[in-house]
Length: 386
Image (cartoon, rainbow, N blue to C red; front, side, top):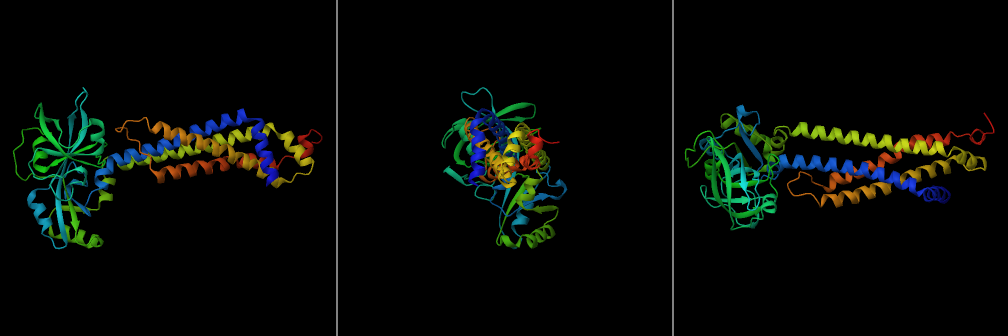
């Protein structure tokens, strides 16, 4: 082991410029793979965050909506019917729409997801600063962390929401009463308002009717016993007509484009790993071809194949680890420069899996060069045989 390590490190030091350059290539591959993983996590989180963190055990849709939130409509009578089913603890209607927030000192409006909830019911997120919503028709809002970071709004501040009513823009003044954690929906940060206020503000073809209990898109359902999900799902769909009930995971997996988006990014990540294997394998194959005489000399003086193989593998691992370390540090540094609205999220689990994958592809890519070094014949390498 000591002889193998000496040979590997000695060669790296004598050709440090070449090996450093290749470590930088590995660093770029690491940067690419980590950013693809972070982009996948960020885009996925931006689509599912609100539903994933929903304080509910199941979500009810209109049965003809085919799990499309935008196509689903559930009125107040149906919400009351769901609430009356034995085993249901609480329900809350949720509505989704798109709007813009006008931010002071910024000429460009901030696009947001306008989420309508019933105050104090499932669907309203917990606040980390300020208080929750109080009345269904109050001109108040909870903003998520991303909106707060981008707009600098704090509880007590006033802001303006712009939405389309008919053929014109309408503007609505709201007061921030609380700030929640990040609750993105549809890749946009969320502004959560009472359901009646939401119905008044949301974009629509004609002026709002002023209903005191408007229809919502879906209903969040909390159960007395969350472990009884399947029996309760069947009971709800039997006792309440024309609804379809699913768990939150199924709900966000059926948001438009979510599965296709994640499949595309996973494919890109796989190709990046494949490219890494080919690049690393190619480099060390060329490196081995260039030092065939040295390998032949080592074998001629009695160096066993195990030391030659172990030396090559230690060299591959050292260069690969150095490159991954540089790439990981560069990724962390670059991540600090992105604004909060960029959908790039570095999760410990996905980042660790990506790093482990890169650490494995080095030795895998270098196996060809190790195998070639074992097949070198001393006399042929030294030009003394055929």
